[in-house]
Image (cartoon, rainbow, N blue to C red; front, side, top):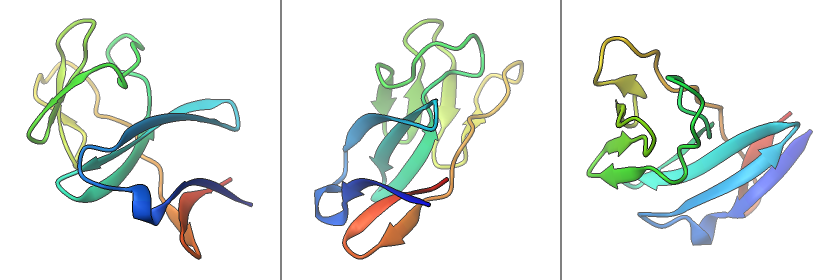
Length: 99
């Protein structure tokens, strides 16, 4: 089942918005002109990532400063797992997720 999240026309560089889909907190971002849908939870200790800072393509968790390279989701600190991404789906002029 397709769950629409946003109209394609609204997905500009710097876009950032949270959604709750099927009990999961998700973060939709546009980084380097690429839409990314990820779990809105830092894999280090579960802090929300929507309040993190983005400098270039590096997302920094506000709580403990763990940094992640986007779009790969790879942590810049070796002791932390990577970010969890979800596959985006498209239907007409909307972007969303299949659940």
